[in-house]
Image 1 (tube, rainbow, N blue to C red):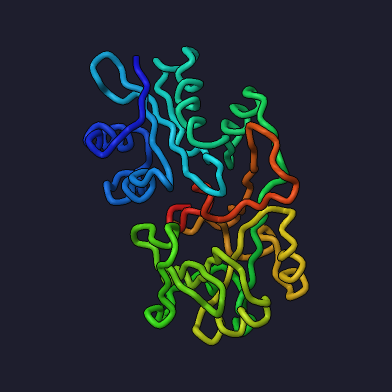
Image 2 (tube, rainbow, N blue to C red):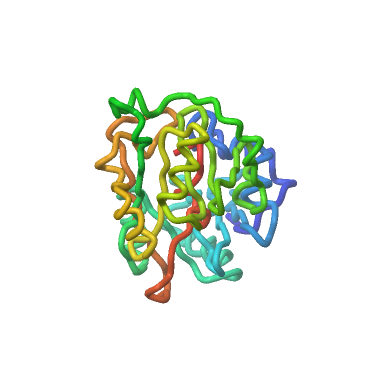
Length: 277
């Protein structure tokens, strides 16, 4: 088996691998998405393990943000495991930047614990529901809406140029309009929460969410304006399809110590991928 960096000439092999290991309609089944995620060396890279017949049997992705290589899309076939393949793939990513990750399941946490990584506070997701909704239950909040998003369209960042993403700017804040479920999902919060809310409700959004690190001081303003952690809200984390009662449970880890004031941005890892989680 050999490991190396992937390129677009590997697409047919990559597509076969992704379709074999990931659920139907996963974003990585599309070449356009792969190019967005891994086609630009300034934004991310894909690393693969190939067997003796040149089939891909292992993969590690790295999304670059704030001079960190955020590890995503990790999968090894059984034949690869216990042979040091993952270490070699991580070594390739480490050539770009120090490593970190967000992990949303026990398997991921167990992996990084075994590797001796540092675990930080969990990420937090705050939600605000439009107060005009008289009976704020999931069925009344996560509904299709008709918002003229062309007037607020905003694509001035790599993240907001993600294929099929409806990037918008409301006031000085940026986000993603998920009109099929009524939401404005913030990427950058640059307004006073009350001002942002007024603009969002006027446009017709039914709810807003914001995910960040526990140590983000902007949270104080959200709490003052009655935003709540998502497990107190009726808007679940997984919305495609809607999974009632499923809330944000994502841990932030790094291989080497980071500054105590370090903040995890929605764009750093695939925890913030809009439309698939």
